[in-house]
Length: 171
Image (cartoon, rainbow, N blue to C red; front, side):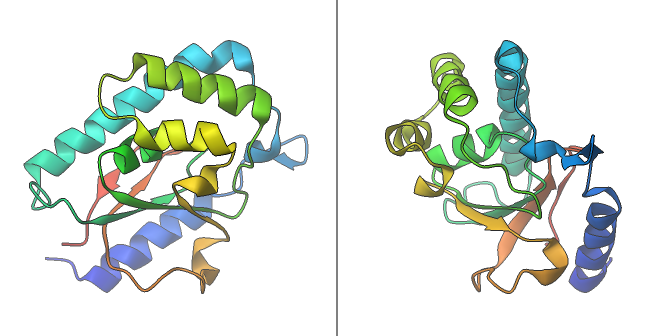
């Protein structure tokens, strides 16, 4: 069995190797999002959230209503993270180029996500009301190797959205 430190080290190395997708000199998360792709983004977010919930139900986390998740590289929206928060999970998102609230894209995206998601939606409603992700998520704009601001919690699940859609836990 691999140690927790080995797991974390290998996950960080993989993250660092892929963390800076740049288009025309601008990090991907800082580019203007295409509102025409909201339908696909909603479908992807729901699919990813369902995979996470399914994985949690099959893991040692099943029945644990009080765990924390660290999402590395959350991409241009926080759909899956907010669906987890709506179901009671504490989520921290971290990226060196963390997306900021884009009123046109994010308002439309989260409204569409709330319409299509059949489960709880309290976190989505809260961020729509406040117009900011920080209303429901802990948001860290920092590379993972220098996150001194991470609260002293034990993350029971780590996942990365952008590159491999992997779900891993050190436990």
